[in-house]
Image 1: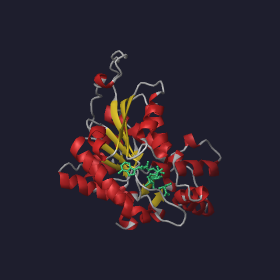
Image 2: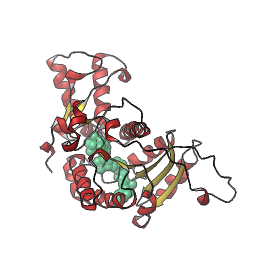
Image 3: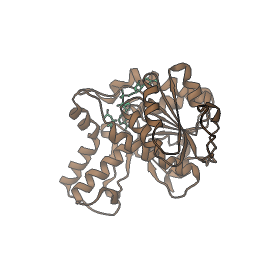
Image 4: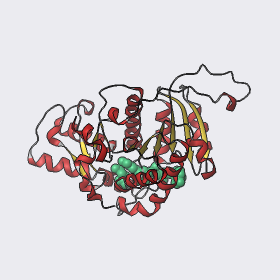
Length: 310
Ligand SMILES: NC(=O)C1=CN([C@@H]2O[C@H](COP(=O)(O)OP(=O)(O)OC[C@H]3O[C@@H](n4cnc5c(N)ncnc54)[C@H](O)[C@@H]3O)[C@@H](O)[C@H]2O)C=CC1
Ligand SMILES: O=C([O-])CC(=O)C(=O)O
């Protein structure tokens, strides 16, 4: 799919309106614990899987999700290296129970019963590549993971990070449609990093704390499809034409800025993990039933138009 195939109205969504409230579930995996351990007190919370957990984004994201008090069970899945990441993260003294899964044959076990599935699996860019250059490899990876989601946790919310997001989200939608499990409200392309960058760069220009700034960013997640709404910044402010040009260009090319700075060692991982953890937390709060949660995301608009206008 061409990146221009999106429009601003595709993108901004009220997460709370998108999510079916799901009652927090109790952790039931006592039988999996070492014999010397007593049964845990059954902290309520959500079951979350990170798919691609051993990667650059996946490892930091796993750490951040282990720190989230709304998570009671954290499943870490990858095709390589999950035992080490799982052992490492599991020693953090926060409440989520961590379990690791490796290889296609364990995908079903990794996904069964999950409330939220976060997918940072797939190849990252190198300098000179566009996100679309990742399509051939990452489309197949996303397809097989989403087939697993459709089979093992068809009601889970999916946060899709793998690039090119403008294409992987429609691919995931087709997989779910074919499986008869598609619900546009449960499939969310993660574009929070564009918002984080916009907040950071706008705050720099204004000389304020980025935490006090909120810039809606709509459209898609590639080049000119990334549309920061600089007229809608909160708190209200105005920019000179030069500032608008500088900010738009820097926000749209933030990913390339990191790819070039990493000089062949990958793309954004740390800021992406931070952004994904923030977005996942908003989803979990929405699933819990919290009101007033608004996040930008790459979503299908057909059946969601009424919630966009609210
Ligand atoms: N949406 C966004 O704003 C952003 C998206 N990305 C994208 O996120 C993806 C991951 O980036 P990194 O973590 O830096 O890459 P990475 O190469 O460090 O990690 C990717 C991980 O995916 C795993 N993987 C590959 N095939 C898999 C499969 N079938 N099932 C499960 N895991 C599988 C790999 O083993 C690896 O551990 C890339 O496609 C990148 O372009 C990166 C930054 C921002
Ligand atoms: O630019 C890339 O390839 C990774 C990405 O999506 C981003 O950092 O926004």
